[in-house]
Every structure is written in C-alpha cells, then in structure tokens.
Length: 50
Image 1 (cartoon, rainbow, N blue to C red):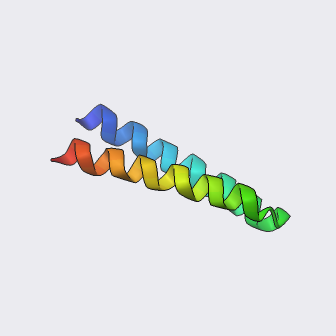
Image 2: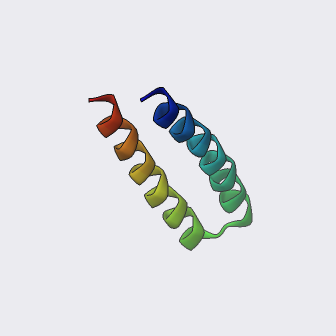
C-alpha cells in the first residue's frame, strides 16, 4: 500500500506541474486531460487506502 501511495503522490506532483504549464500556455484541452488523469490517480489512491 505504501508503494502505491508514494507512486500516486509522485504522479500527482508531476500532474500538478503539467497542469500549471498547461494553464500558462492557455491549453484548455490539455488542462482537461490532465485533470481527468489526476482524478483517476486520486481514485486509485483512495481504493488502495481501503
């Protein structure tokens, strides 16, 4: 469980960096894609915590 949690945490950090870049570039489509992937990662993290 700790490995999954750590991996998801690192993925979230990466996704946040990418989201900030997408916002700076004004790329709305990319922002939505990143947000969707972040939601999926969060869902995985919540499932692993149970």
